[in-house]
Image 1 (cartoon, helix red, strand yellow):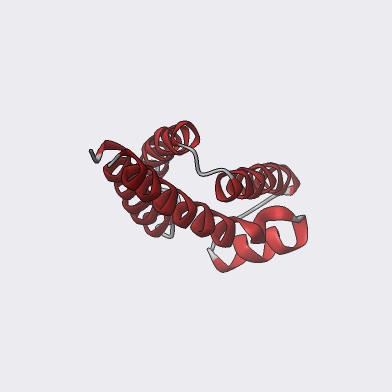
Image 2: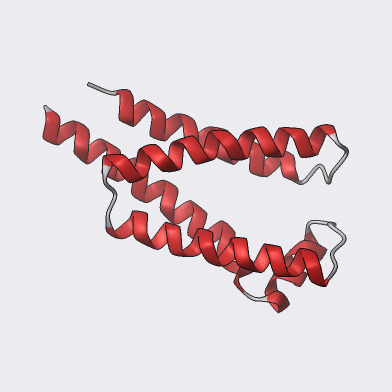
Amino acid sequence: MVAMTQDHVARWGRAGALYDLVASIVFVTPWTGALALDVLGTPHTSHTLLFSTLFGTVVVMWSIVRWLRPERLLITADTIGRALFCGWFTWALWQGHTPALAGFLALELFWGAAQLRALLRR
């Protein structure tokens, strides 16, 4: 039973990692990041590009780590991070930021709930 639960956690952890990789890879360079921000209708400066590139790089690296080692501890940390991201997306929407964030919020809620369910499964 424990092995089956670990397999379930690993499966959902890898799926979440793949989603993060696909959603974030575009933010790894300033050129592709600027294009993505334009598509999302988000104004940007050299400062926002710097931070989106830094965060895009970190998320891509974190995705690869979770794909290669979908361990319970890493998936737990990622699930907590998703909850925090949801809080920040909600705050940003409340502040009037681009409605495109609502799509990211919905996806973070989905992946966070899926991973939490796998972690709590006995």
